[in-house]
Amino acid sequence: MHPIEQFAFEFNVQHDYFECHEVLEELWQAGQRQDESLVALIQLAVARYHHRRGNVAGAMRTYPKAFQKLERHAGSLSSQGIDVSRLLALQPLFMQPDYQHIPLPLADDLEQRISSLPIEQLQDLSFLRHKHVLRDRQDVITARQMALAARQKK
Image (tube, rainbow, N blue to C red; front, side, top):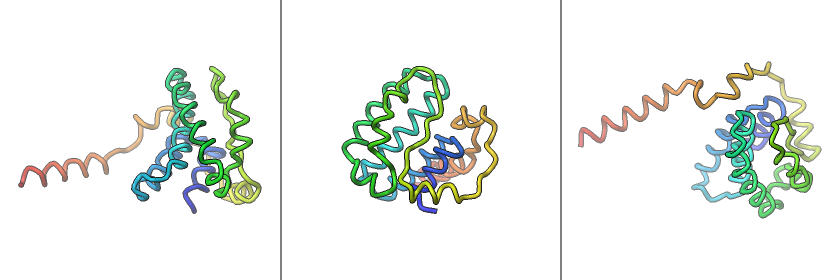
């Protein structure tokens, strides 16, 4: 599955904003951090994650940055299936203090591809809300320990 498809699926169907961030950050890193349109979507997902967790101040600081980049990169994002004009029109809804799920507006083609994917049962909302703390990080811990050991051998 293409990363933009996976992002849209996680955003609209699974409501897993943390996973949205992970999917696109990997793509962004692979591109030597050059694609600011990906940063716009990453920031939108981060703001949604903060908003749902009750960190309204963090969300309200991040939304404007995301929407500025969305506007700047509307052409690139539209060509990937994001309906940027509808998304920009929804900005006032995103900026409301009370969190509510707002689907990412998609072009018909991407919407159809997303709707044809098998839907996994939504995870526990508590897990989604606090995923950055509750996820298994053993692979990251192991990689850091190996890097530290390698540096100590030098």
